[in-house]
Each structure stands twice: as C-alpha cells, then as structure tokens.
Length: 391
Image (cartoon, rainbow, N blue to C red):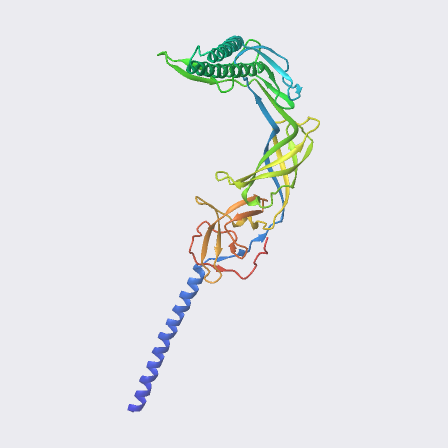
C-alpha cells in the first residue's frame, strides 16, 4: 500500500509541476507578443541619386564692362557743358568747361614770380662776371668772387622752382576742360551752368555753431561714362555647384530690359572663393552687346545647364519630419533597429520628391510616413512586406 501511495504522490507532484511550467511559458509568450505589439512597424526606403543634369536658375545683376566717374581736377564754376545723358563719346572728347578765376590769378602771379627769378639770375650772372674781372686786378678778394658765384647758383635754383610752379599751374589750368577718360556712353550728368565744383581730393567745409570748421561733403561727380559693348552679369552660385561652375560654361539670360528675348552669355571668371556669409561663389557672365540694345544696371535671370559628378540624393516627400530643429528624417540602424533622427539640408523641391544636399547617405534606411511621436533612440520593426521601391 505504501508503494501505491508513493506513486500517487509523485504523479500528483508531476502534474502540479507541469501546470506551473505551462503557466510560466504562457506568460512568457504573452509578454513577448505584447512587446512585439508595442514596437511600431515601419516601412523604409533608400535614397536614390538625383539627375546629374542640373538646370540652375539664379538672379544676376547687370553692369557695364567699364564704368568711369568723372570728377573735377580744378576748382571753379561750370561755364558750360557740351554733352548730355545718352551721348556717345570717345576718350578725350570735351564734356564741359570750368571757369577758374582763382587759378587764373595764381597762374599770373606764378608767371610774374618766374620773370622776377629770371631777372635776378641775369643780374647775378652780370655781377659774378664783373667780380671775376676785378679779381684779375686784385681789386676784390677771392671770397667776394666765390660769394657771387654761389649767388648765381641760388638764383638758378629759384628760377627752376618758379618754372616748375608755373608748369604745375598750367597743367592744372588744362583741367578747365573736362574730357572723357574712356570711350562709352554718358549715363549721368550731375552739373549745370554756374555750379561750383571742387578739385578731386578736396572737400567743402562747414562751420558749426561755435564757429569751428568741420569737414563737409566731398566734391561731386560731374559725369559717369559706361562702356556697354560688353556687359558683365554677376551671379552668386550655391556652394554645392561651385565645382562645376567653371569658365567656359554657357548661360542663357532673361533680361527685364529685353523682354521675350533670350540672350546668350559665357561664364568668364569666378572669385575662386566661397563667401562666408552667403556660402556662394561669385561668378561673372559676359554678354556681347555691340548694338547697345541691352542696358546695364538692371536685373537678369541666369540659367545654367550643368552636369555634376555628385548629384544630390532624392527622397520621397513623405519622409520629412518638421520640428523646431528644422527638417529631419528618421533613419533606422539595420543592426539594432534603433531610430536616429538626422538633420538634413533640402535642395530643390519636386513636389512628391525632394533633393537632399547634406545629412544622409545613399545606404540609409529612411522611415516612410513617420509618426509625430517618433523619437531619437526609439526601437522599431522594419516591415518585410510591401516595401516601396527606391524613388
């Protein structure tokens, strides 16, 4: 009997052990299923390379090839002007005349001083010669002769200084006639008859309430002349296209001054440096304008057709996360299934697709339709079904 009881007890213990094991296994399975249900499942896509052919449209500023400002080189009053805006001039053509009474008087005084210096030199030569003759008869001392010879040299130097001063004023007087420094078109006239103009480098002065003289405004510009046979168009090219924006590239331009007309230009030079504030490369496009129909000083739309060796990556538009940090995407680490939020810089927007200039790699697994609650470091499951194709 005791053997039967022992078997019964062992059987009962095994049954109890089985029941507890089954419950523990069920609980473990339940926790595993619950954890899987709590981990979100996401669809991912890989970025695709964009089109290497880039049509870049940028604003540009149109300038003349050479633009020269004309200032007065002598102070006085405008006597007359002979050209107006729009006039075509050659280098050396007369633009205006200046009446200079003060300079005229200075020239007369300088000429009189020159005549006086010449007379003093003549007298010194005659006196020196007489002393030489008297020396032969021992009527004067050698010291007296030396003094007269030295006086001749002094008077020669005085005459030379007077002649140089006269020559300088005569050259200043030549600036009474204001002439064109270059060939071109007169684009600005800022004077009229009777206006007072001052020489370049001078400023007019004004007195304050205490009678102290203070610097005033610098002398004004008289004319401005532009050479427009060739126009320069300056464009700021984004940094990521700097390597393919090189001299020789053809550009198409749309100018506000030439509506419904496409103008062809050529990129001739760049600044060879990136501007730190705008992160752009300054480029110059030259446009031939022999007929003078295109006007400087205006606005242009410049179109470049470029081929880049490193096209930007393209991602679907429904991968973006917009938060205070700026545009981001969620990238899943394929080894750990952990989400990392990456800041990106967007290039061109094609509607359903976007160019990404920086922030992601071609092998990144980017989450489609990310939820608003997606956080950095969150664990997710990558769905193996219905995976979208790379854009």
